[in-house]
Image (cartoon, rainbow, N blue to C red; front, top):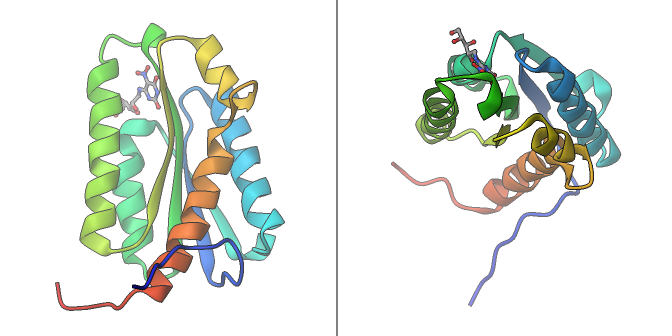
Length: 158
Ligand code: INI
């Protein structure tokens, strides 16, 4: 039996962080967490590019462009979709999540989901560096781990 599991060391390559500007008070904190997560695990600041999209709705097409560029080992997507501030919460949150997953599967590049989908501003703040951690940092570490895991797995036809 062989077991494969990604680790957070020996990572190389460039990383992109795609941020949604909508609710940027929150997204700035997610970005802070993501940058901290990458740099503390050995990624040089010079190897990280940050790209700002208008909102979470636009993240999939931005992530697609970044992933297709061949420049990045992974793309970390950050955003905050808060139910209280929109009547079309379900559409924005659902299509953002579905689009990001689709782009990851189409390109084979790890694209991680650091997009908060919460009912309230308070819940978003809790997940952006206060009592429930920082989901931006979690998404950054998931990117590192997945890059490392994929490097261990055979790349077959598909
Ligand atoms: N975008 C977000 O990232 N978060 C939100 O909470 C949000 N709300 O509330 O509507 C939001 N809307 C903008 C959307 O992502 C697009 O930028 C916009 O519809 C233009 O395409």
